[in-house]
Image (cartoon, rainbow, N blue to C red):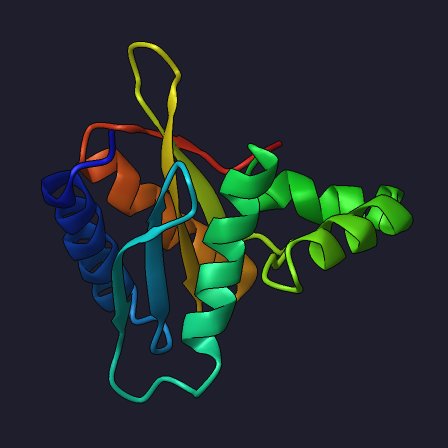
Amino acid sequence: MLTLKAAQTIMDAAVAYALEHKMKPLGLVIVDQRGAVRLALVQDGNSLMRYDIAFGKAFGAVGMGIGTRTMNQMAIDRPHFMNAFVAATGGKAIPVPGGVLIRDPATNALLGAIGVSGDTSDNDEAVAKAGIEAAQLKADPGA
């Protein structure tokens, strides 16, 4: 189970990493393994849709059980399938890097995901991974 304490550790470390690396204002959303929001944060100066995009990255990752980096490649390789998946989620899934699965390091069990949006996709993913690793959990961004 993804505890609120673990989610808070992930969020605090992710924001600290973003500030340290002088990233653009971010939206960050952490969901549990069911896709339910555990914690969300939108930094000052963030644009309107960043929360929704961050949620879509996290929700899509847990919905498919893979990080959004892999989903992004699937969208290139198999666009009909990924379009169908996004449609099946009611348009909620965002298959773009920045959605990173949170796994138990001992069992590899899926605990949830964090979605980050606001900087480049690579930077969004780096923020997510930094937060997860600070909580001593396993970050799984996909291939």
